[in-house]
Each structure stands twice: as structure tokens, then as C-alpha cells.
Image 1 (cartoon, rainbow, N blue to C red):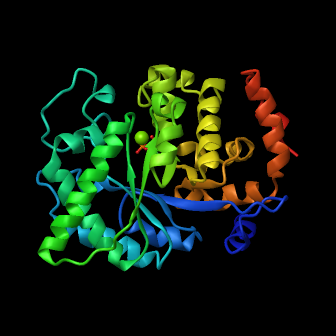
Image 2: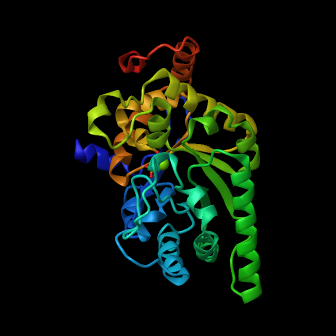
Length: 317
Ligand code: PEP
Ligand code: MG
């Protein structure tokens, strides 16, 4: 009940076998950082910055973006704030944008859109770098599938640093850079990405969509949108294991991370960082505190080796 969940707020997210689990918040608007703090979040695992750009005809200026990012960073008082660069296209479009891609989900979206619009990208990167003066900012790149996109992003960040320096504007150097793992190709061949980046974050919403060829917004096929498909779980497991081997942090920030019915499954896949809506945090923490992480890992690994469907009931204590 709610009173019990309220007591949980200040309890640590520790499994029965003593593994500390990070519980971060997903936010879409700067004001939501307050709810994240109230829920006891360890940080912001995903700030979907595109919502600053939507529902309007003009683009937010560098200063407007800087104010929005800085307000979140200040509210989080030193906790990591992971800001995702613009993820436009497919289900998220700019007002008045009349370009219609043949297949928007496979088109010029997210990092592809940003690399194709270098001025827009530079403005956002400058704002992010400036906001990092107020706390701990991490930059997260959506929809990466190629190593050359990582390289181009690093070059864009370096150029933004140089332009701020030339303007005498202060910013923090060595900001960590991560990528979303949400395209199956990236998950399958994730090792060099784990080496080249500082952290990874698995976007299961898109990863499921692209793996199963199910439009995440199409109700006619919603029954086939299956987070528990062994192929999806194998991609998540491979990503977590590869990040672990490279010594890099890895999170899940898709809807799965906030669904307390699959918390034990994700712990069994080796996940130690979850990012979700602030309102889901206490339910997930409750599951974490009742789980034996290593026992779950053994169970899940052996089923996945056989590509077997895992009945969630078999993972209960
Ligand atoms: C995802 O794809 O899982 C994700 C977290 O990003 P979004 O839902 O914004 O595409
Ligand atoms: Mg996504």
C-alpha cells in the first residue's frame, strides 16, 4: 500500500544479495526534475530534450535551452543528469514540419537529423556544455547504429567546445558521452561502441519496435509488441554483458525499466541501472529489495542460451 511505499522512498535499492541498483528518472520537461527528487531518484537517466522543441513554430535559442538544462542540473544538486540530444522524427515531429519521410521510423531522425543539421546540433551542444557548469551533465545520443556517427558526434562536441572557448564562455571539459542502444544492429555489434563511449543506455521502446518489426504506436499489431521475446532479451543481455566487459555503465531507459512486473527479469539479465518515470520508482525499488540478483542471473542465462521464452512466474522467490 501507499504508506509502505512511502517508507521505501529513503530505503536503499539493494538486492537481497547486496547489489546496489541505481534508480534514475526519465523526464520530458524541466519541471519534472522536482518529482524525480521527491521520488528519491539517484539522478536523471533520460531527459528527452525534444519536448523543448515541440508544440512551437520556432526553435529554442541556445540561451533558452541552457536555462532549461541548467534548471534541471541545479534541481538535481550534483546527481548525474543525462540529457539526450534531440530525438526528432518518427513519433516526434516539429510543428509545421511538412517533410514526410517514406518511412519516418527508418528515416532522418534523431542523431541522423542532428548530423544533417549541424547548426541546430551545435546550438544544443553549446547549451549542454554551458549547463554542465552547474553540476554533473552527461550527453546521450539517440539512434546510433554506426561508429562513424559516434566519431562525427565527438567532432561536433569538440567544435562546440572550441566555439565556447573562442567566445570566452565557461563550460566543463570532459563531459561523458553515451549512446542509446535502440537499433538491433547496435546491440548485436555493441563491443566497439562500449569501448568508444563512456556509457550506454538501452532504449527498449525502439529496440523492441525494430527487432520485431512492430510499429510501437500501431494498435493493430500491439499484441505482437512483446518485450519478453527471446530475441529482445538476448539483445539486452548481450549489451549488458559487453558493457560489463568493457567496464562501462549500462542502463535501461525504455518503458520496461519502470514496469515492476519485469524488474526481476531485468535483474536476471544483469541490469544494475534502471531509468523510469518518477511515479514508478517505489514499485520497482520494492521488487529490487525482494530479489536475489545472482540467483536470477543463473536462471535467466540458462533459458536464454536455449532461446526459450521465460515465464515470469518462474522468476518469483
Ligand atoms: C526508447 O526508445 O526506449 C526510449 C527510451 O526512447 P523514446 O521512447 O523517447 O524513443
Ligand atoms: Mg527511442
